[in-house]
Length: 276
Image (cartoon, rainbow, N blue to C red; front, side, top):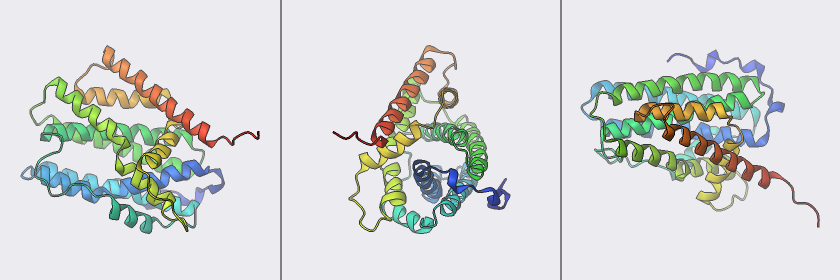
């Protein structure tokens, strides 16, 4: 473990500088990061017999769990009513990966590792964007360390990806696009609900699309062009596309458009209606 929670200067916390929407997004991210044990078990099943990768996956899981612990502790310091352990238990009770598998849902081990590269590209850019968007000193420290870890994790998965036969380009594109689309799946929706709605005295019924949409809309306000550029170039590197290729540039423009659209949706929903 390259850093621990003791390396964070918690005394610098300035809770008053944390807007409610950003706090809600961090609570959600904390649950997703802390749920790494299921992913480790899944990867061990898929890569049974590849001892080198399984050992690397175990270390990755420990670091991911630490990310969740750091974000969860920060959230509890900002919001004394937030119970990270209870929220995580609720999340895990309602969202589980398919663990009874012996082959990757991506069709091959190479496909699984490529999908992990896509995920790490997204998380590296996300925590960099969150770091740059917040004025809260402790969260900036945490996000800087997590972003560095996620860049390292990208290189880890990419190194092991190169050990396996590379799928055809069309299949690589299919896997990458499929994993990007999955950012709207039940994981983020359930995490949002467990962190921000289930703790209410009378919580609303779970609505996957609404919960995932609220989280993604907030995230859309955090990104700058350079963060999108970083993610797209990392994904292009994993696929094997040239950074300056037309497809790469097109994906960058599409990603920026989508985030801007999500951010505008969030701004519109946050603006009080004018009196008639």
